[in-house]
Length: 129
Image (spheres, rainbow, N blue to C red):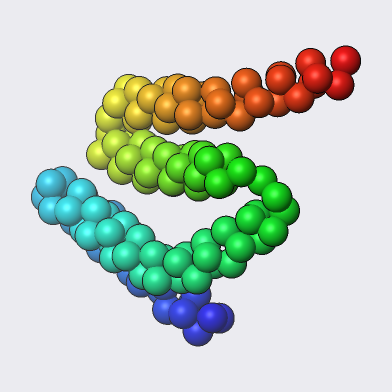
């Protein structure tokens, strides 16, 4: 795991250096280098995340939580990750307004997605009173 982390860190730093160097001459190519690096690292993360998600899913099922609530947690995490990557790419390309809009969308999506959890929580609190 440490070796993979070191390799990924070196890959990211080299990609960032190339992107910065290219930004001076060809801004569009710089953006493509950043995007390719993000896609490559994200693809390798998926290989690490799948076994971890299976283990977390088993732990949450053993806790007695409803499958629908577990699904909401995983969807919210996915929305957060996708939103962060999208907003970072927009910021890197100089579009901070679009990055802020992407973050706002992500916040709204997670809030909307969590409504069933909030409703269940309020129902349990009301049942206790």
